[in-house]
Length: 298
Image 1 (cartoon, rainbow, N blue to C red):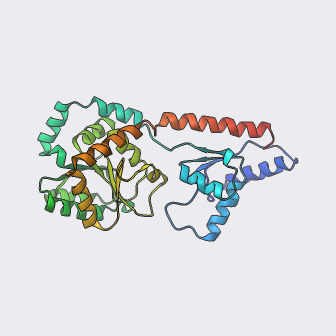
Image 2 (spheres, rainbow, N blue to C red):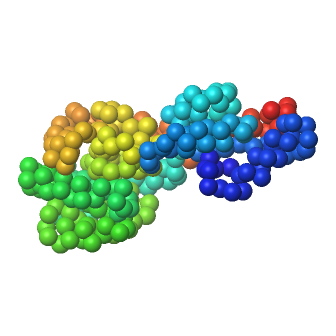
Image 3 (cartoon, rainbow, N blue to C red):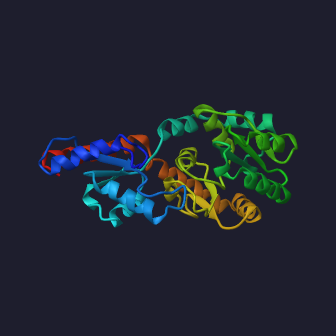
């Protein structure tokens, strides 16, 4: 079950589980899957208490990340009944597509859009308020002031699309290419040196690893659990401050070959660590553990 208070189907299942443990009935083996804590908003004491109680009623917990597991364990849940799945998407297919991109394809793409690969960034994702698109557009302006040949490839769609299109039409260093899928994402990654995401970081972290395009983000408190995968200075850059400070960090990274090489190596190393195949294997191990608690009466 999802670790969510609003899912009404959860409560009859929990009641059956309580009756089974009291010897007054039978019920299924119950596990929960979730973040472990609330990431997208400030949770008050009542919400935290209710979620902790809800979680305590199941026999196994499946946490997206190690940080979520630590939070659940700190609330009293048995550590040996928590599985960290390392939430991921099918990055294996994306990495394979990236590896298949040829130098000729990159050269043709860059020629078509007037790009200098060593001075090209990439935004890949939805155009939502949580992604801080106005912040990004302002930062791009500051980057172009310092590095005139810089261009930001922008791929995706969403409510903030008019702002993206306006920046692209105004010649402000933005190249909008519309929504894209794996092969196209792979080409964009190959043509770029950094992925720019000043707003909410989630599964774009594992995309950046697969594409070997290090992420530059901010230390906002509103990131998703996968933000934990980032290691500042090794596989990504995490910046403090506003658009100008962010732009300075992007320029400094682009113009530091040693730093760029280290970040790209970090991404390549972690691409094999966060995969949907590994996530599936860990989830399977957790389900086996959950079923053993059912047989053993846990």
